[in-house]
Amino acid sequence: MRMIHSMNQHNALESRSFAALSACLTAVLIIFGLPALGRAAEAENMAERTLKRIVERQRELLTEAAKQGEKLDAAALQQQMQTLTHDYELLLRNNPQFAAGFAAYGYLLSKIDMRKEAMAMLLKANQLDSDIPLVKNQLGSLLAEDGKPLQAAPYFISAIKLEPNEPLYHYQLGTLLTEARDEFLKTKEWTRAALDNAMHYAFQRAAELAPDRFEFTYRYAESFYDLEKPDWNLALKAWSALEEKAPTAIERQTMRLHAANICFKIGKRDHAMALLTTIDEEKLRGQRDRLLAEMAGAAKK
Image: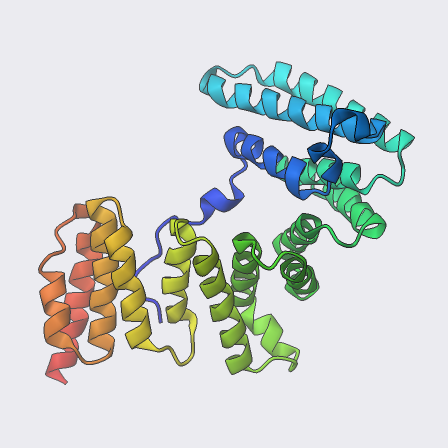
């Protein structure tokens, strides 16, 4: 059982803030199957050029919205977004076989909580072109958020097969297998060992592919708690490695608290005590004291 609460590390992955969405639009241009965007302008067809302009306009609007912060004129932004929506619909009406257009529009809609509409656009994109990994991932995300993990899993797996070196896709699969473990086990198609291996490997690959993404490396280390039969010595190495990378005192002490917890689990009580004596951050004292109490209780038995 996980004793220490996780840090708020993965919210940034699915942030719906204007700044995060603006950054995502750059990925849309690259990942969403606009190979023409890398060619000379004269080689682009009209639909590709139009989509590029729409996506770049989105990025400009959302970047500016992020800069305005609390001073944002929400009504003005909504009106501008409606204009973009009209541009998308006109583009797709004139180009009903343009998979990248449906993909980009669906991706945007999924990030502004127009889920039903987003699903329709992404499914259409997937029908037109089944080899766009970000479409697969977004479909998986929407289905997972709708409480349909069994339907979501094949989309995440397909995204990984199409783009095996994208860490986010591995992370998404690992998260799904963890949060919906019971539903997968009920199908009898998974054993607990197989599910644990797939989940743990997914987080491990995300961490390996993006070692500088703290949220991925943290979740990999944390995933040992989710295993039925964890390798605590390997977990201890993971937390120690994270402590070396942690930029702040409270983060370093958080990693040390995890390490102390694991040392206690594997019978290294003295080592655990030594680590706990170094924990003095106010926000961590409650967890430190609970672990000390648990250790004291175990010593009396």
